[in-house]
Image 1 (cartoon, rainbow, N blue to C red):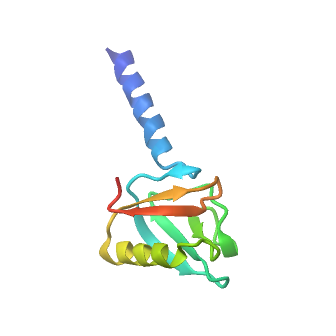
Image 2 (cartoon, rainbow, N blue to C red):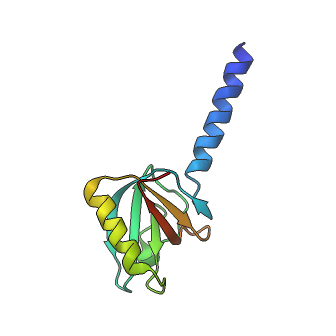
Length: 110
């Protein structure tokens, strides 16, 4: 019985970490805690729970994901990020690479 409990806890911790992997792939139901308009016209976003392995534009560090100014939907993504930030709404972000480059957003999360 004790071994089962340990196994369940181990599996839950593995899957909870995978839910917030830094990419590529989806984050699951995160809250936006900071938004930065960068000098190159892009947007950096920090979420909770924290990301840890990102390579953000303009040197904001490993906790920020980035929407680059070359993204064809940057204005729509920025508007959705602002709305979710202002309302405290959960979002899910899709990262196109392991640098946390944001490609898509779902407002309301999964």
